[in-house]
Image (cartoon, rainbow, N blue to C red; front, side, top):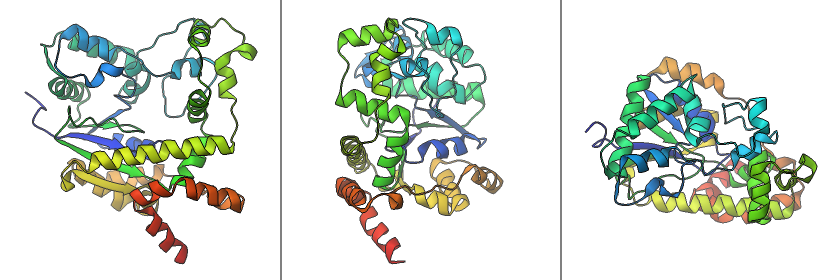
Length: 340
């Protein structure tokens, strides 16, 4: 069966680590089918054990477990999401847009609704089998639809399930922990996710949100969207980053060394063409120095936020992120950078 014997390719990180810009660069390689946040929007069945029949597969691919739609309806913006809601959709109670159509497929086509419909039609024709067989076949279908050769699932966080993908290649993108925390604190959706974790909505409040029963000034989600940077937010986001790093490192340790590529975002910024060629080689993409040179122009200067903070907050962020810095080898790296 096409694709089953090939290693599935992944990009994983922690959020705000540089995986999005790297994904967009790879999307412009003629070999690469980059499935951005493919698994993130599917529900808890996405890595289910045992045989999965065609209706269940179609149902899994139709899911949306992500609270991004209510966020977008209320005027929230995410540059990572290309799908644009119409004015009617912004006002529609209980709006539903399947996660694949909302997030992953707009990167592949100008008509994500059509490709989504074709994908669901394909799923409904499949035999009953394990997801470890369904997904490679599905990626093969999408490669055929787009004329690409190598499928790469790229997510801001870890979507690598080694029970489903025991034979895979994983590129782990990481960035300085304090800088990630400060970037998350400036990103409206990460702030919302933190606010919802620190101050969850009740079932009754979620019902109000989904049915759009409240004016914006009374809407419980709008109140969470207005969260501002604070020590409590820093602590939560640093814990989120450290937990993600620890999970990634634990997963990577179970793979053969040659199936893992560690990439510091700072190296991509400093030496983009050489770094991109290394990434392309790791994923088995055709060597293409012209591609690497052209997409390197997509990078923009990144101004560090940490040096502009008060010394006490700098020290506190360093303390909160210390474990993750050690796990990614950054403690020694950044100390050497300071020494020049």
